[in-house]
Length: 229
Image (cartoon, rainbow, N blue to C red):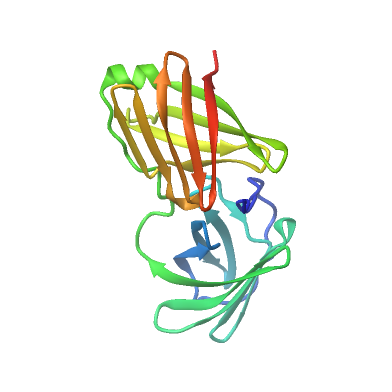
């Protein structure tokens, strides 16, 4: 099973370099194969110097300080040294086509200028209030993978506006919340999908237990989730 990229939530002092053509918000999709991550950089200029933050919106709402930004004509390079992240690319017609590197992994990444917001929240999913109350809270499960037990957590929450949010967390891999892209509950049957990591969970709710099938690519096994009191 491919692990998600682990990102930190610390913000460190910035090293800033000259430039102004790259200021603003840039968004792109980092394609890991069985997982796609929405990412962004927010570049600002002050006194002819650039500073910026990196976002991985599907993993965390917290900004990550860019350690250094370097501009050479139409070429941009930034580094996040604590995470071993390096991006370099060329600007052409409001798009930066480049390469994202982290811990020996190299991936193409195109960043397009955006006038929207930085953060894309979890998909808004509606459920009747009594159904939400039956699911509300944290559910803990164990998935057997190659002789090891992998903890899987489900969260059924409401945001500050009262909208339902459903997340999956694999704390043994990365303590970040992956938002559900699909949720259906009919009577005691529950069906969920987490498209960003290619996971589908389908099962049955019985009181404080969800007995389910967990599928990710060719991997398919049973898992039981118990509600945490």
